[in-house]
Length: 464
Image (cartoon, rainbow, N blue to C red; front, side):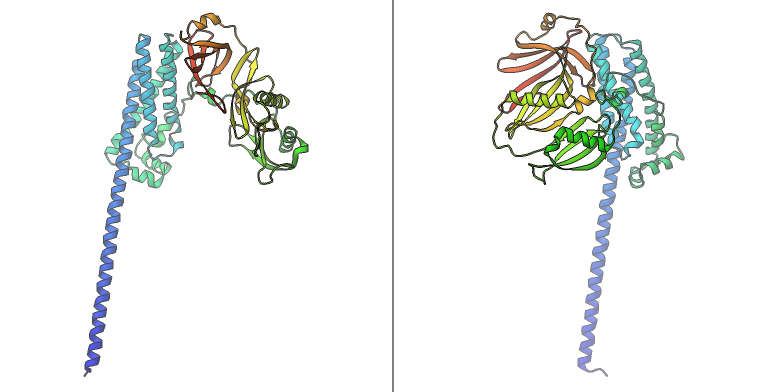
């Protein structure tokens, strides 16, 4: 028979076991409850995401349908006013379609052609709406292009409508698409439907794009870099070019950083330690693989005092450019900061300023040292233009200016458009009250092409 002491120990042990069991049960209950809560939240999150994707998709369907309808209307518009309104609607609806297309959980490359198509519909319709606004009749080629765009929009609309049916039937799940990836899921969908996401792009496989004066046209995206002349050079030749530009006597050490091919221009990049510089703050300089042109140079140092004038800095910059393959450059606008002036130069041909051919140069105001340059605008655009005679006189151009504009100076310039084309204009610098402006009047038809506000600050002259 157990003693009283032994019975008490057994009783305490049973209590301890029950206490542990209670703790285990409580912890298990908490874990189960937490799991259920997490599962519920995850389910709610998935449902919310599914709803958001569904909303984006059905908005895309609606806007593509609107694009199709407005394109159809544009084919039969009989007046410039109606045409401008209809094409502006196409531009707006195509832009909105792009927005909702971008919200879908589909890799960009899967719908690249669809996005490109919507981009070009948007930009082309905007381009034609401007013609309507200026009472220019649309050509047969314009209408043929609109018809082509309409046909593709019909095809895209049919594809999206069929996909919407399959979504309603539960054949397509955004959750699965996100989980497995667009390519895998698209292949699964294509097993039972010709209207898969993968097939949307195939519908546009023969769509080569339109050649027109618009921001997304293929001939602009693939345009030859007119100022990038010459044959390809190797890295050692590029290094020697960099040494010539900087000056061998200034260089303590030069390091090759290799060929960089993922930018606008393929470049050889170098780091240079200067004799009178900080080894931890080297100069960077980039030379184009094609032709060995200076593309970029940058160096920063402290400027203790401003000694040289703005006019002297302008001449220092022009001298540097002329010595390195950029002749006939004219200073335009500048900005001073911390003893350094950054000057914009534009190429000048026969007294006409070529604003697309821009170069920036950094000049130290203590001794006129060239600290930096950026020439990609020039290298992309520069060529000798065949300048036609203006069809209107400067006096006729002035008739299209605001009567309150006090003309301070006048000249001629070639300006870039937002679509990367170029227009020969009369450039008028003028003043209304205390505000200064640059006004550009098309030298062919007298249109007001652009107005820039001149901002004079203590640190320089800017435009916006």
